[in-house]
Length: 546
Image 1 (cartoon, rainbow, N blue to C red):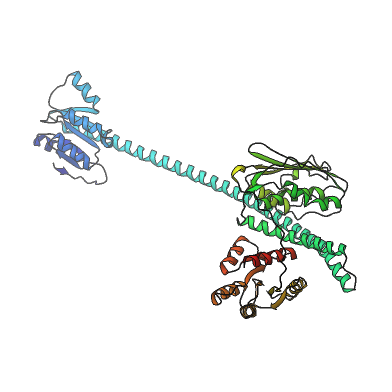
Image 2 (cartoon, rainbow, N blue to C red):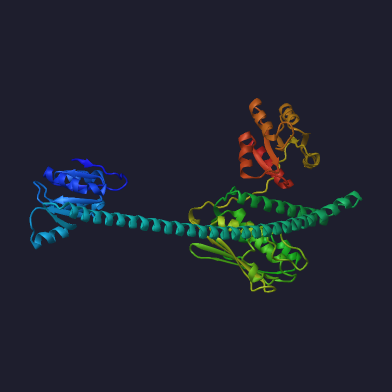
C-alpha cells in the first residue's frame, strides 16, 4: 500500500485498488495533476483496511483480482454505513456483457474505465466524481448546519416561551400567595380582636366579683357560680388554643376505647341551652357504641351543640339525632338559627374564620369548628355542614367508623374521691414562684384540714421537702434557680427512702410534658388552672398509693 500526497491535505484522498503494481503506478501518474492524495491497495482485503482508517472521495477498483474480486469488494464497501455512498469507478481490461454491467451498477458503480487507461479520460472522470462528492458533502454539511441552526432557534424560542410561561406562573403564584397572606393576616387580626373580646367577657364578671368582695359584699351562691363558670370559659379558650397547636404539630394522641358519650356531651351544654330558653329535641335511647377517644368525641359534640345554642336566637329549636349501621355511626346537630351563607360554608372549618356573627354582635374565636373538624378527621371520619343560607338554620353532621366495638376496652369511669378522715393531718408542701397561686392554694388546702408549708423557689422547695418529709408536695415546674424537674430528680437521687408523693402542678399539659415529669420522678401531673376537686382527688389517689 503506497500513497502520493498532493498539494492539498484538507480534501479526501482517492483510493486505487489493483493487484498489478504497474497499473497502480499508471493511475497515480494520471491523477497527479489533480493534486489530490492517492492511496493504493493491491487487494480487496487491503482496500477494506484502508477504508477502516480513513474516508475517501473516490475508489478506482479493478474488477479482476485474486481472492476478493472487485464486485465482492464493492459489496463490502456498500455494506458499511460510513462508505455506502462512496463513488466507485470499476477498472477492467475486458469488455463486459450487460449482466456484468448491471451487477456493477447494482453494487454502486458510477462508471467503467477500460484498460489500457487513457490518462485524460481517467482524470476527467475522476475529477467530475470527486467534485460531485465534494459538492454533495458540502451540501450535506450545509443542510446539517441549517438543521442545527433551525433546531437551535426552535430550542431558544421554546426556552423563551417556557421561561415566559414560568414567569407568568411565578407572578400568578406570587399574587396568589400575597392574596393568601393578606387574607391570613386579615383573619389573624380579626382573630386577635375577637380573642380580646372573648377574654374580656369572662374577665368582666370576675373583676366585678373581686370589686364586690373588696367593698365587703357577702359571697353569694350566684357569685360563686359566676366565678366558676367564667373561669371554666377562660380555661376552655386556652385549651382550644393549645389543642390546635398540638394538632398542627402532630402531637395530639387519641386513646381509642369503647364509648357512648353523646348524652353526656349534650348534658354538659344544658346550662347554655336553658340560659337562652331553647327547645332541645333529643331522644336518648337506644345508645350506640363506637371505638373512639371519649374525651375528644365529647369535645366535638359539645362544641357543635354549644354553637347551635349560641348562634340561634333565644327561644330557638335545637335537634340532636344519631344512629349507626354495622360499621358507621353518625351524630347530627340541627338548629333554626342564623344560618351560614352557601359561599362561606367551604371555609367555616378553617382556623381563625369567624363567618357567623350572633345577633348580639359576638362571634366565636374561629377555633372550635377547626378543632372539631380535625379531631373527627383524626378518628377517620368526616364533619360536614349544610345551611340554606342566612336565617335558614344549620346542620352539622359527624360521620365516624364504629371500629371493633366487641373487642375494645370500655372507657374508664371517673369515681369522685375525697381525702379519707384520719387522726393524722396530711402534711403538704406547695412550691410555686407565683405568690398569689402559692398562697391561695395553701389557704385552700388549710381550709380543707391540711398542714401546709410553702416555698417560692426550687432550692428552698427541695430543702423544705427533704427536711420535713411531707405526705404530698405540689411543685410548679417553672421555678427560678432549680426548676421543678430538678427538684424531683434531686429528691429521688439524694433521698431514696423519701416517701413523699410528688405532684407536678403546671401550665404545661402536652403529652411530652407529662412523660417528662414521670421520668423526673413525679407521681402525678396536674394542669393549671386545676379545680379544688381535681387537686383533692389527685392528693387522695397518691395517699392511697403511698
